[in-house]
Image 1 (cartoon, one colour):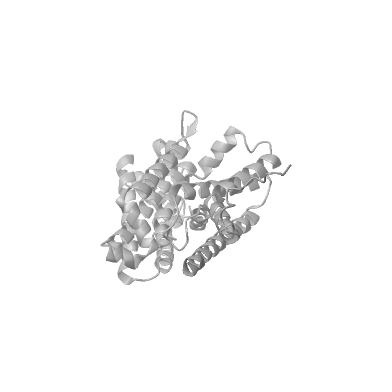
Image 2 (cartoon, one colour):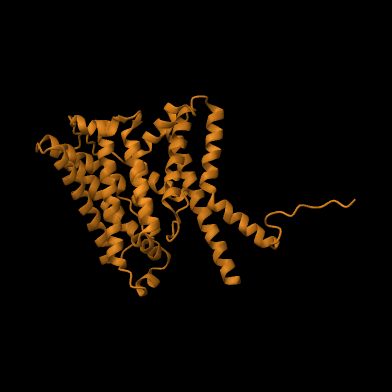
Length: 337
């Protein structure tokens, strides 16, 4: 009797198309695959990894990173880059602590005023990028140095202590056994994901990153939207800065040093194209979770901080290389068609 061979899902496609579709499928779910692999590896290496306390600890540790990732996702999808986010953390904590301590402003007023100042700095950065028509990396790199310098000048180079209890609770408190910073992060991620996916503003961001000239011809206010993205990124960095100040119970000018690279790494690992025009907020958030799991798992395994930096840098290089090669193959197939 003749055996029947079961036809695979991709059997109707030519061999080359099967390979391409499999690669695209892998690219689509690569973030979740990496996340699953890390969970399996670290849970096998340590029995403490999957405990609820450790999971909540990971989420608390990435709360600042997750908030920053939301702003960076908008910026990178538009084809830009914001290297000032780490420096904003330090300046936010210092300004807020000074306004509440030395000036004596009420906590809500000091927090709102601090966020307004940081947002205006972000807007000025965006306006310079648009007005001068210079690479965002160059402008934000310069602003990163300026902002970090201002944080040290205002604080005198020393952390500002004696923060109000409400700010400390904002960074260290719990609601129904869930850390407050985790709740703040998840609320912001959900709101920004909805804006990016369902609003006209989100569609314009994708359009600018996909083809800026076509976006201009379609009537999109490219300059205004681009400048506003850096203001949004700065505002979210200010929120993250308040959370961080509460976590460490001080406004430290050195806070967030090097954080910008973790944010970029998280966004790119999450599937957001470094060239702009592609990506999702959910993917970027999972990228932040991957960074948190890497740091936590390697710490549990007693891997030193310097080695962790090597691992994170290597992951970023591989993520960018994967994105570039995948896009190159897609362009090649479009030309062949």
